[in-house]
Image (cartoon, rainbow, N blue to C red; front, top):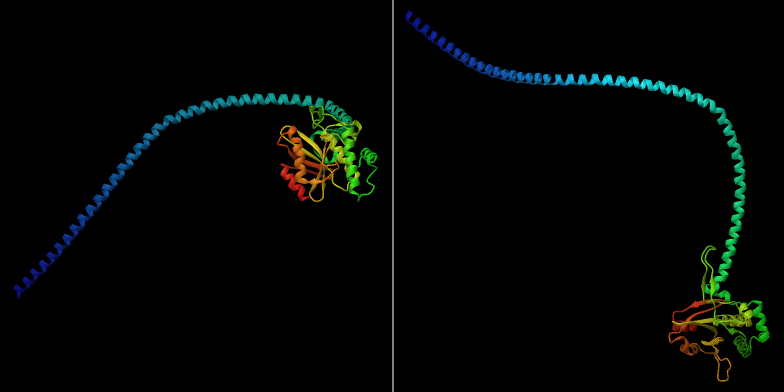
Length: 371
């Protein structure tokens, strides 16, 4: 029995020893882990301490380096304070001087108020006077402007009247069947158209008027004719071609081909009481120009009356005889080709009711047939 107990005790002791050994191992392992952990923490702290020490040293170096700069700035500021204090003193002195000047200026201004008021009153009186003078001058200017406008209008009218004789604008005005001088000469030659249905009488009287112009109007070349400028201040010029009105040709009994044609056309229009066509026809070449009278006749026929050229459309017995337009116009152009050249062509026809221009004789012929 006792042996058994000892054996059991030994077994128990062994188990306890094993348990204690295990506990010791566990504690040893934990201690090693703790030591290792704290060693790592201590190392980190040492590293942080070293870093902070380095930063401290750098800051100390920075602070030491800026002490000198701070002292320099302090010295500079102290110098500037002294400078600006002197400037303030100077400005205060200037302010005092300006205040003194202000006082003197105020005294001067107060002393001149009366003079200023007197001057203002004098100026007001003068303004009133000169305003009345200006009003009077404006009236005079308006009167002068009105007179000037009348002068300009009169000049323009004179210019247009003078210049229309050479610029060949508004040529219808040159044919004047209602002019008393034209009427008188027509009736002194023909006695008037007694029977408007008698065409033999018409052509006989037309021939009589043609003969009168040929025999009573002397051919005269145009001299230099003045060209009035657009304004009275322009330069005067001259032109060697001008047209006369019929009453002027009748008065002078002289004129060139245009003047004779214009007169004869006006006479024929007057004779028929402006009921039938009679027109001035103008031909041109590269060297010259010429004018005559044409009378369009029904049926595409034509009569040419050329007092300056001693030509008229007639039959074998010398009586006026209307002829086909194309044939007669070419007969007349052929009559003038030896003097004017082969390039002569119909350029224009006009009367108191018409004004047409052409670029060729063929254009003129086509237009005549289409009338």
